[in-house]
Amino acid sequence: MARPTDRLALRRYHQHSQSAGSPTIGRHAWEAMSTEQLLLALGGATALLALWAAIFATRADMAARHASAEARRRWDDSTRPTPHFTFTSAPSPGQPIELDVENLGGAMVAGAVIVQHGDDLFASELSLPEKAPARRIVLPPVLKAWQRSGQPRCLLLAGRDVTGRTWDFVDDTKLIKDPRRWVAAQLREMRLQGVVDFPGLTGGK
Image 1 (cartoon, rainbow, N blue to C red):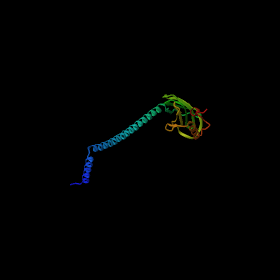
Image 2: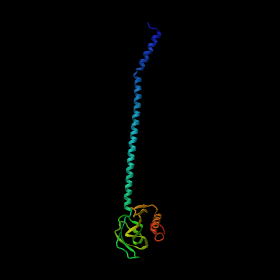
Image 3: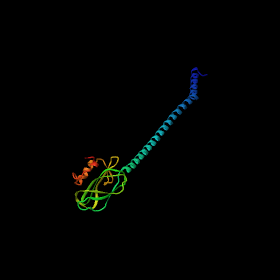
Image 4: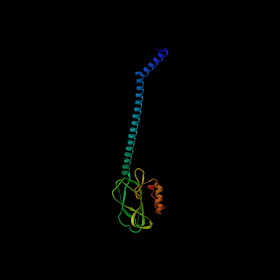
């Protein structure tokens, strides 16, 4: 016959076993696991959506930059002057030289040109309308060159467009950031400082 203490311990054991296998506790554990998995899935989906949004935003920004650069390039091409000179004939000693000039680009509001023919240097300011056909211009002699040239050549050709930018057409159509300083350096190199000046291009008087 079992003692009372044995029966009490046995009854507690059975109660504990029934509680451990209770469907209510299992359901709570499953619900807790399901909630955690759902939160993890939502976090992963949110991170993935954020990544795709960043990728699309980057691509849209690159497309906008490309479109802006392309529009700027077309604008530059439409406003930048494209002067072209043709030497017609050799000038008489001490006489002006005649050239044909046309403009294939935008208007040249103000410009400057220096050419050499033989021992002589010729210079003048210059302006050209947009898409101007070839016309004859005359450049006066300004000084004897310090070195003779076997072929006529253009030493300086620069101009300002309608947007206010100044271009060097001799050196592959480069933008001139400071026209006054640039012209001064060019004239110093050609030993023409104090001999010629281009106030329309440099803004001087």
